[in-house]
Length: 112
Figure: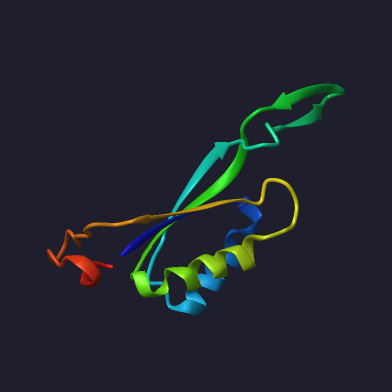
């Protein structure tokens, strides 16, 4: 199993969700997060005063899939989240040793 963490622009969330649904991804977890990468935030103007926003709002999606389909999931996220501008986000893929469904006690691929 693989755990895929994608940090994307919040307005691309619906596009990513639709792309994952089309692949048959059973579920996902969404977190509203803030962060910055190379762009180091941005400047905004409020009531005539300029100020720096260091942490930019992002959406973080966590998805667990079978190893055989993780590349398709990553490609779908890239395709649907990409704007071509700075701050599009990142995707992290890690190996997942075990998953357990609390309600039934199912483990491994049966739990996802």
